[in-house]
Image 1 (cartoon, rainbow, N blue to C red):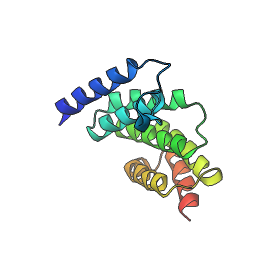
Image 2 (cartoon, rainbow, N blue to C red):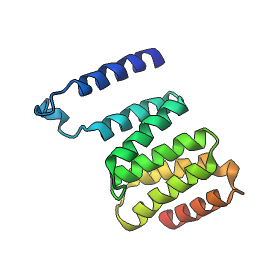
Image 3 (tube, one colour):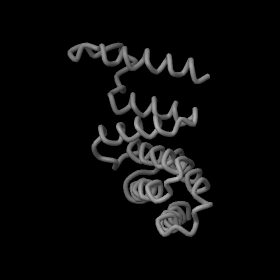
Length: 145
């Protein structure tokens, strides 16, 4: 439900913005920061197939996180790549996907991230002749070998 999702996003983001910086907030929210909030919002828009908004929030999450050399960093790169794939930008999607695969090959292990990488590969299959997509597909082959 796009309307209810939008309402919930606005409510959650407003509550987050209104937090006192000196107040840690509820104990259950210890893991939330602005990067995480943007990732969650971007994921909602990804599920709603609202590619421009999903891209905007995922890009913000990647920018705010700093290093992408973590499981969360790899996941954010993959999800951002997915938004570009869905927007018909295979080169950008492949570049981000390849960065995520490099993290997964050298720094972290995540079955969840590998599943997202494989979905991204399938979404880019129709662009198989694009050099960046070929390179990405090759890196995925290394990852799942």
